[in-house]
Structure formats: C-alpha cells, structure tokens
Length: 314
Image 1 (cartoon, one colour):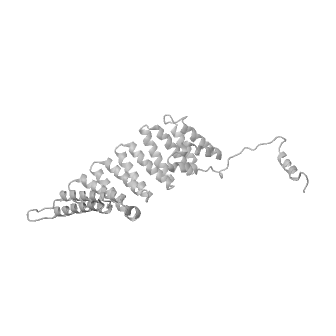
Image 2: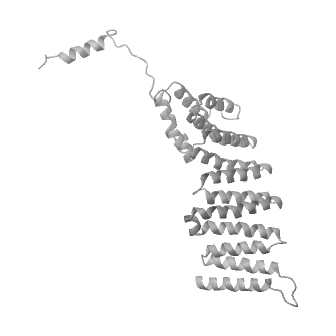
Image 3: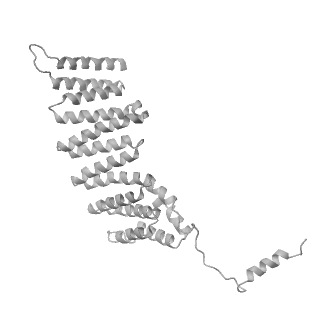
C-alpha cells in the first residue's frame, strides 16, 4: 500500500514537471496545474507516511500557487503541519523552527488576506506543535493568536489562548508576566460576563502573587473581585479570604487546608502546583498562643524537675 502511494506521488510530480515545461505551442508554464499535481503528490506521500517528502510537495504547491492566494496559504500551513507529524522533526529540535516558520508565514498572510480567524487557529496549532520542545516560543505564538482574536472582538477565544500563555508563564516561573497575563484574561471574561471563570482567575491571581511574596497585590485582587456579580460569599471568595488570613497570620494549618482543598487541588495543573508548594512566611510555622496551666507559671518546669529525679538517680 505504501509503495503504491509513493509511486502515485511520483507520477503526480512527473505530471507537475510536465506542466511547467514550455514548447513551440506552449509559451508559458501552467503553474496552476503544476500546483494541483504537487498537492495530489503531497497527499499521496502523506498517506504513505513519507512526511518529509509530503512537506516538500506542499512547499512546491505553495510556490506555484502564485495567483490563488487562499491555496497558497493553505499549502504553506500544510507544509508546516507535515513537519509536526514527521518523527524526524519531533526528534530533531533543529527542524522544529522550520515547521513553525511555515505556519507563522501562512498565518500572517491569512491576516493580510482578510481571514484572521484562520490565522489565529494556525498560530494556535503552531503553539501546540512547539510547546513540548520550546515553551517560550509557544507562549509567543499563543499571545499572537490571542491578539488576532482580540482585534476581531472574539474575546472568548482570545481569553482561552491567553490562558494557555499564562499557564506556561507560571510553569517557567515568570510570575510577574503571568500576573499581568491573568489580569488581562480576567478582564476579558468579565467583559463577556463569564463570571464563574473570573472567580477561578482570582484564585490564580492570588496564588501567583503570594508566590511573588506580594501579599498586598493578592489582597487587592480579592477586594477588586467583590464587584464581580456573585463573587462575594461564593466558595471561591471564602477560600481566598481564609487563605489570605492564614498567610498573613502565618497559620500553616489554615494555608495547607485551603491549598489542599478540591477547589484548588483540581485547578489546571500549573496552578495546582502553586497551591501545593505555597509556604507561609516566617519559616512556615503556625503561630501558637501561649497557654498557662493551672498552678501558675513555672509549674510545668517544677513538674519536669520532679519527674527527672523521681525515685533517685539509680
């Protein structure tokens, strides 16, 4: 089956090359027909799992789609996606930028051609492709995709992509940038009146700010959220008030109880990790109130002294 598809692909390439030849009766190369044959060759190579050759065929298709821009963009993006499924590309990190380059180029042209949604989706796919090997580049691609959707007033999609960027920033411990990104997310969800998600973003904000050792910023996020309909008195609100109080009072038990609760434990993995690793200031010890036993001060010491020598030294 694979050999048959490979032979089929080469037949299409031969036809494409024939379309490009000129003669006494054919003065100009037939670029559209050549592009069509290269497209068929790419599909055949892909079905035969010859992804590198499929990528090359898609690049050729794009090259010869000089007049049909829509097909040109699609061919470029497909060239990049072929590198996604190529085992060589996944193993060799040096090849990954080439795949991203094709998809980014296609996405920019989608925007210029008046199809921004397609551009944003292409950038999202590129982010997923590069994320396992280059998180910083994935952050950049998700931000670009979010920006495209935001410019089109597609705030839900923009917020979702920004959320991917925020989580990766947390993973890289770029917490200042993460805090700003989550704040922007939260404002988008507030604008589209998705209030329950705003509550979750408030929790994320608090965790990030406390890991930044900025209690004031964390407290401010909760106070600002009181203006969001339904937040005051909600499970999320109560948990954050308890967490902030426990953190401020250096009460390790309270902090651990809130951070290990299902509300925080089952958040997105990167935020859940912030919760389980949160430490209270002052060495992480709970403040304990001194207790005075009956018999007055000094009684425990006296009792210990009596016990120590009770029955003699032997």
